[in-house]
Amino acid sequence: MNRFIPLAVFILSAIDAVTAAPAAASSNPLRGGPRLIGYSPTNTVPVDNTETISFQYAPGQTANPDIGLYLDFEKVENPQPIRGDTGGTDPGPRNLNYDKINPDKLAPPGTDTGVATINAQWPLGLSSVTLGKERSGWSREENTNVMPAATKMAGVNMRLEAAGYRELHWHVAAEWAIVLNGSCRIQAVNDEGETFVDDVGEGDVWFFPPGIPHSIQALQNGVEFMLVFDQGSFSETNTFLASEVFAHNPKEVLSKDLGIDISALQNIPEHKLFIFPGTPAPTDIQEQNKTGSAGNIPKNMSYSYHFSEQPPQLLEGGTVKIIDPLSFPIASDFSVAVVTINPGAMREIHWHPSSDEWTFFIQGQGRATLFTPPSEATTFDYMAGDIAYFPQSNSHYIENTGDEVLIVLEVLQADHYSDMSLAQWIGLTPKQIVQDTLNLSNETLSKITTEKKIVVG
Ligand SMILES: *[C@@H]1O[C@H](CO)[C@@H](O)[C@H](O)[C@H]1NC(C)=O
Ligand SMILES: *[C@@H]1O[C@H](CO)[C@@H](O)[C@H](O)[C@H]1NC(C)=O
Ligand SMILES: *[C@@H]1O[C@H](CO)[C@@H](O)[C@H](O)[C@H]1NC(C)=O
Ligand SMILES: *[C@@H]1O[C@H](CO)[C@@H](O)[C@H](O)[C@H]1NC(C)=O
Ligand SMILES: *[C@@H]1O[C@H](CO)[C@@H](O)[C@H](O)[C@H]1NC(C)=O
Image (cartoon, rainbow, N blue to C red; front, side):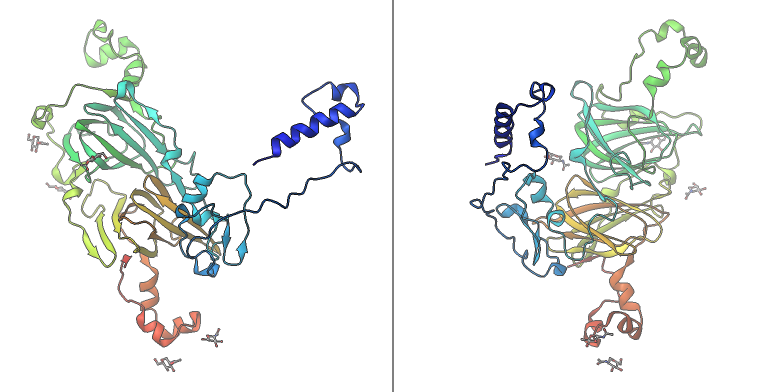
C-alpha cells in the first residue's frame, strides 16, 4: 500500500491542530506550519521493516552484466533494475508497462554507458494522431520535435480508408514511401508538364521530388503507408495544399490565372481538406491517365517502383532486399534495405559510412546498441511501430528478441546502399594486427568470416 498521501495528510492536520502557528500559515490550508521546518525532537521518520520487495529474475539476469543477455521482463513478476551484482530494487513510483517492454533500459547490459548517446528511439504510439474528416483516415509523424538528433530524415505514417484522399499538395522535402497495407493510386504532374499515374500495393514504393505536386487516393480496401522525408524537421502539417493555395489567392487573380469566371470559384473549400473522403477511383486506371503535349513521365524516371515483386536475397539468418538509385533512379538520395531477421538471428554489427540511418520496425521486436565515440553506448528495445535513428558511421546491430520474424526498413540518404560489417573488417585485417590489438587466439581468428553476412543466424 502506498502510505505517502494518507501519512502526509495525517501529519499536516495533526501539526495544524497542536501548533500556535502565525495566523498567515495556520489559516492557509495549502501550506504546513513552521514547526515542520528542519530538526525537532518530536519529529520521527517512520521506519517500515515489514515490507520486502518480492520479485523474480528473468533468465540471464544474474549473469555477468557484460554478457548482456536479452532479459524478457514481460514474463516475470515485478522486474527490477538489476544485472548480475549491479543495480538494486525499485520500490516505485514506476510505470511497469514501460519497464516490461524496455528491459535494456531498466537493466542495461554492463557494456552500456547510460545516457550519453542520442535518443535513438521514437515509438509512433507516442505521436499524436491527426484525424481525417469523416472517417477517411489519419496520420501521425516523427520529426526533430520528438527526436532532436534525427536531423536528416523524418517519417509520417498514414492511413486512408477506401476512396480516402491525401489532398493534392507539394512540399519542400523529397518524399519516399512504402505501402504497408492495402493499395492506393498515386498521381503527379512535373515541371515539364509530364504526367504520372500508377497503382501501388503492399510492399511497393514511390518517390516524389521536392516541389512536385501529387495526390494519393486509397483503392477499395484502404491503404496504410510510411513516408520518409529527407529533412529531419519536416512536418506533415506544413505542406502546400491545393485547398490552401486556392483559399489564399485573391479570387480576381485566380479567375484571371485559370481563365474562368469569379463566380465559378464560389464553392471552393474555405479550409484545408488534408485527409478527406472522395469518390472511388475508376477501376480502369486509363481513365485517369491524363496527358498533355509533353506526354507521360518516361518510364526510367517513374515515381513508382513495384518493389513487392523483387525477390529477397536469402541470408543465413533472414533475407534482404535493396532499393536504391541504381534501380530506382528518380529517388536520387534514398537507399533502402528491407531486412527480415529470424527469431534468434541478428542484423550484424555494422555502420553506414556516408549516411545516417532512419529505421522503421514493420513487424516483430528487436534490440540495438548504438555505439558513439569515444565510449558511449545505449541499448534500445524496439517493437513494430517504432522508429530508430543511428547517426552516420555509428555502429549498431539489430537482434531479434521475439518469437516471430522481425522486419525492418533501413533508410539512408545516399546514392547507393552501403554498410561496413564489423566481422568482415576484422576477418579481412591481417591476423597479426588483430592479435596485437584484440588479443584473440589463432583458433578464434580462424573462425571469423571474411564474407559480409548481413544477417547472422
Ligand atoms: C491489411 O491489414 C489487415 C488487418 O490487419 C489484414 O487483414 C490484411 O491481410 C492486410 N492486407 C494485406 C494485403 O496484407
Ligand atoms: C498512360 O498512357 C500512356 C500512353 O499514352 C502509356 O504509355 C502509359 O503506360 C499509361 N499509363 C498507365 C499507368 O497505364
Ligand atoms: C531515360 O531514358 C532516356 C531515353 O529514353 C535517356 O535519355 C535518359 O538518360 C534515361 N535516364 C536515366 C536516368 O536512365
Ligand atoms: C592476452 O591474453 C592472455 C590470456 O589468454 C594473457 O595472458 C595476456 O596477458 C594477454 N595479453 C595482453 C597484451 O593483454
Ligand atoms: C599464431 O599463428 C602464427 C602463425 O600464423 C604463429 O606464429 C603463432 O605462434 C601462433 N600463436 C599461437 C598463440 O599459437
